[in-house]
Amino acid sequence: MVNISVTTTALDKIGELLQEQQPSPVGVRIFVYQDETGVNHNMSFTNDISTTDEVFDVGGITFIADVNSSMFLNNIVLDFVTVGLSSGFVFQNECATRSCLTCNGMCRKQ
Image (cartoon, rainbow, N blue to C red; front, side):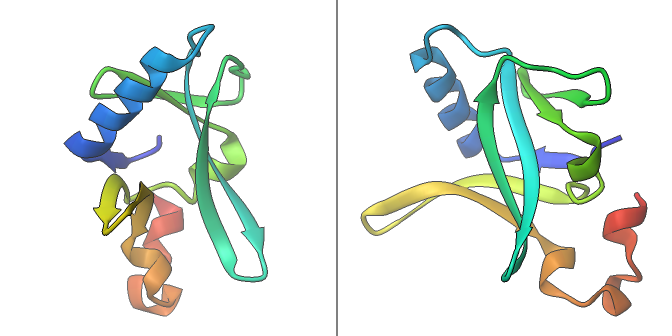
């Protein structure tokens, strides 16, 4: 089971964006991908839910994660921040900023 926290600011912004989408999406897909910088988090609106996806509700918004991404999503905090003229969604993961020796791999075991 995915254990993710979403700030009120992020929930409000996602709710705003969901209302603007036509047709209305089923939910928000959160996923990870790996490149030369490491494991990265992203999200998009979706109407597709696979039988192997994990589906969960946070603050009335449906989030979807594929089985491969879900193990990297535990203990993530999704926030929406504004710094100067820039704003956007930020994924905060305490385990990602430390070696797995420090957290003993708990971010993948939960």
